[in-house]
Image (cartoon, rainbow, N blue to C red; front, side, top):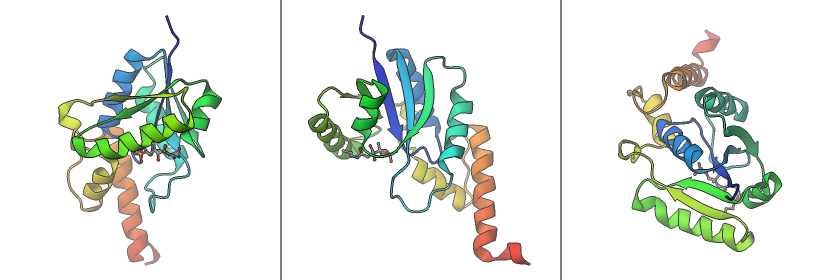
Length: 173
Ligand code: PNS
């Protein structure tokens, strides 16, 4: 039997139920799964620091023995080699994800043929879910139930509320 170590990379800002669904599926398939938060993404203002995202992911996956949480900087394929990983796990929700994911997978394979990308589908109820949508709904005061774990929901609400107070200068009053 081969020892398959997979990296599940992403921003996880914040971790959603869709990510957790994929982590559970991945942990059953691979011998070891490393959930790796990308540190050098230029995606505008983040809601949570890397340390906070790591804490939330750790709390949500503590019952999975073969899952660890880490962060990385630079090229994903270099990080894979450094970790002795032979696979990258990515989730595909809808056909709209496919084009970008295919480009990334093929480019990664060109740079590092020893690493294969494995696509998995999350449960259907998460097919419209993303961290970006979660951040937007939270900012607009909408419901997050079922989209993120309760502990993450509380932290998102808290962060968004404090950001709003800072942005409007109310904290100075
Ligand atoms: O959660 P996301 O934003 O969809 O994750 C994107 C991520 C982190 C997987 C991607 O941006 C990435 O792999 N970044 C690391 C830098 C890198 O290797 N870029 C070349 C990709 S072909």
